[in-house]
Image 1 (cartoon, rainbow, N blue to C red):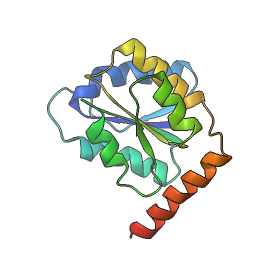
Image 2 (cartoon, helix red, strand yellow):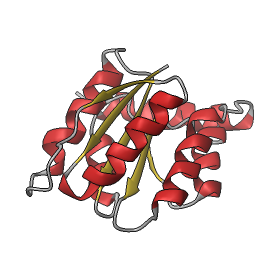
Image 3 (tube, rainbow, N blue to C red):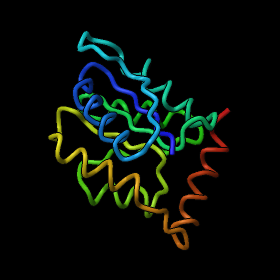
Image 4 (tube, rainbow, N blue to C red):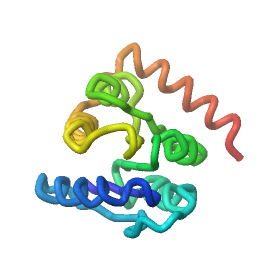
Length: 149
């Protein structure tokens, strides 16, 4: 499975830890984020990860900024991207099970490293449950199709 990961300056350290963790678990990881703590604009990096999912070169994405808010907003501006801002194991599980999210967003300044690893592992291992949730996800896709040019 291919994972696109992107971050701004706030997410450099946790991104490094995650890339190592994901590679140890057998994932292929493509780093679209900055590698220095010099201030940068998160949309410039998050957009690259979103495009990788759009064009099929990545299966899932992980986007990181200080709070995760800007990263999730940016990712969701791309058609076909369903980014979920997750702050614990439960929200990560529900993002996949109920919403079929394909991008995990979180804040590097909000969560500690141990929490992030758990959240990422859950997000990447949980299935979409379909059934009644499929109807809702399809409604979101319909809205997306009507409103994206």
